[in-house]
Length: 353
Image (cartoon, rainbow, N blue to C red; front, side, top):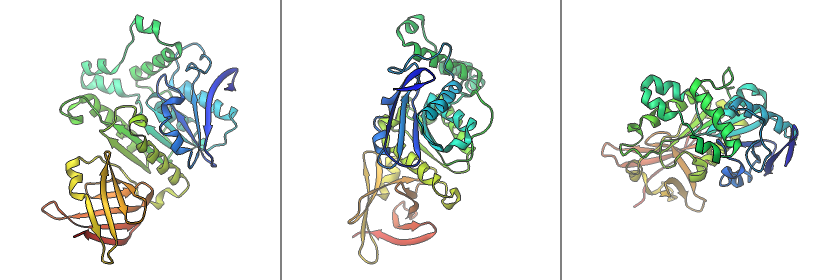
């Protein structure tokens, strides 16, 4: 429990390394939100999770709505009290994504990289209202008097801060994100039988989040239809991959690598790529689907997860210089697959007999 301006705030530190990854949870959530991600990041970086003022067991927050701006300013004070040296890698989910954007805008010299996990965007209701007033009312959540009596005060203060941001379309600060390594993860999971493209709320969310991404010079946008909003709990490996990408990029010149943009392929699109391959020297490799993810398994080596940049081009999540490029014939069959490092073709493999 750390004393921050006379209030006790729960923090959890772990890992080791010169750069600290700072986690910001969504509305009303604390440290436990990152339980499936933080232990993995501890293996290669320092981490800090915390429960904001008003989120148990931390002390109560000051009176008034807890806007994303207030949360960002409070975090800046907390990091100083914790004795952590910038620059940091910021990771924010949902409402925490809004406050981490503000932090990066207000304190650009203290931020080495940014990861947003299905972040709230300030323009949601304003844009929805322009499309269809009925759609805007569904986006702007409200609480009944009964709900307000049963919910914790800390949650209510954050809820009021969040709805004010949505209603006005004002993030809470002016300026643009600094051009730092950036990763964005967007959930497209929907209950609409027509899929994400038939769900107007999902289409709007994807558009608004994509606009944030398009403003950045160097980043990775991961899109998943396998996870609902709490991606760090249902697909923690995606968040770990995004953090690894940003950490690695922050320690190198951003222009040293191409900018990966991840797309989601259907099982039908992936199926022709799967199977065993062999090169001219008899070295074997396999492309495997497991648990909704795709892996490259080179004989005698640990398997590596690969992610799609297009229908035939994948990058390795543990080596962002490496690409796997499938040559697909007019019949939709894989004629060969090339392993590339940077601009150098290291090997060409064909279907194993």
